[in-house]
Length: 208
Image (cartoon, rainbow, N blue to C red):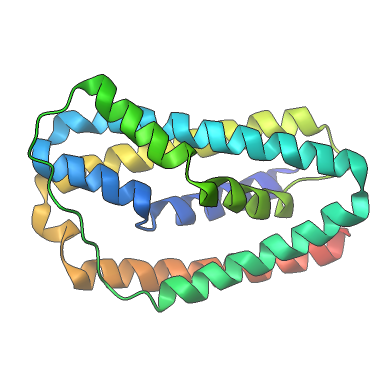
């Protein structure tokens, strides 16, 4: 794996994580209702959920790579196109971020478990990783080594993203509920995703 590939994966992952989605809504919801103390357990739960989904996806990709290099290359192209699709969809999403404050007191373990379940057991998470990861994997390099690097990078980013969202939501309630702010994030993120998809299509075509 080259440094350029790792940097591209890190940049694309950061863009995808910062975009508001079901996991972010859950984190924001708890933070609005219970404050900054939710940040650590929610961030740990999100990271564990992503670890579960990503590990299952990577094991499936490893089996696919061992079975057929051609199918793996096709999947890389599909994944790049998927990034472009997500970018266009996000650009058109508007600025709605509806997170109902959770006013009931919930234990740390329950919050952690809730975040893990929402993140890990969402079928879209595994589907996403299956489509996303092949654009950065080198079929000629050590698969296990790439798996460790990519998972570690993504989990650090996922933890930091959830932790930051919880802190921001607990201290700036007006910001996270402002449709204009969310709309700007969606448009910027959507544009960056389209760019990332186009770049990975180019990369896939050059390396296939």
